Length: 86
Ligand SMILES: [Zn+2]
Image (cartoon, rainbow, N blue to C red):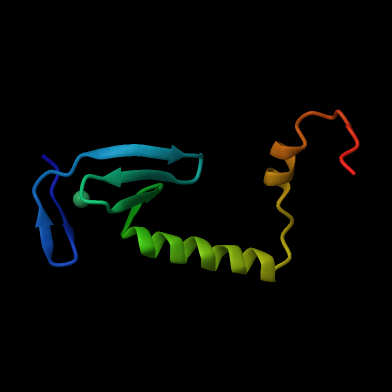
């Protein structure tokens, strides 16, 4: 049985549900509502509000660094049909 702590609470056996995964990071959600972020051998456990804060901060960092959102653009421009939406 896996055992881990959330703050000062020790959880006997949390059931994890795989929410998303990619080459770099895997995200599981725990029964207790904690998100488990796996970066290779490193695991980070965060509360939902903390995860939102992290995403918000990362988004701001990308915007500040002026990194183009190629992946998002690629997904939305998958079909090359140009039906004039004007
Ligand atoms: Zn848990």
